[in-house]
Each structure stands twice: as C-alpha cells, then as structure tokens.
Image 1 (cartoon, rainbow, N blue to C red):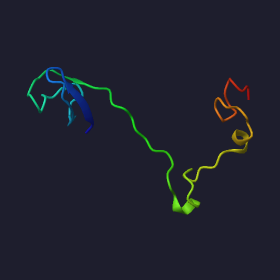
Image 2 (cartoon, one colour):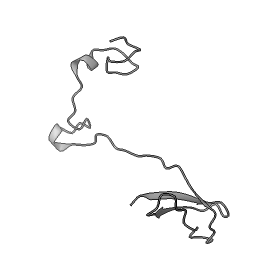
Image 3 (tube, rainbow, N blue to C red):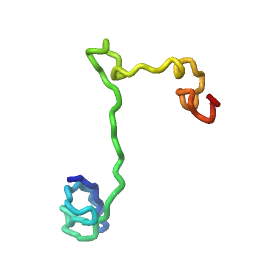
Length: 86
C-alpha cells in the first residue's frame, strides 16, 4: 500500500498516511478537518554506495564503457546524443 503525504488546508499540518484508495484524502490527525490535500512527494533513490567486493568504490561494480570514457562530450558523457553527434 502506498504512503501519501497530505497537508491540512485549515491548520497547515503536513502528515503521511497509508491509504488503500488513491483518491481518498484522510482527515487531519491534528485538527480533524476533512479539508486535506495530497502533496507532491520528492522521489529519493540511492545509486552506488560502498561495496567491499569492488575495492571500496561507489560505482556498484558498474564500469564505464570505453566510448563514454573517451567521448569528451560533457553533455551526456555517453557519446550517444545529439549534442555530441556520436
């Protein structure tokens, strides 16, 4: 079940709630108002990190391809975009 973030329109309290129906807006836990609205949540993801089996680098064992290392294209670093013409 997804956890959504809400804000009360009456008291301004922001809270998270586990909801079963995406269209449901729960009452404010602080003032019990039914006038709440869903907030846009920021997405958070972690890529890489310390990996003891890769010698401590944070690439997650992913090696860059020779074309991206020698590309010289600062826009995409991959050598496969319209700005570098590769």
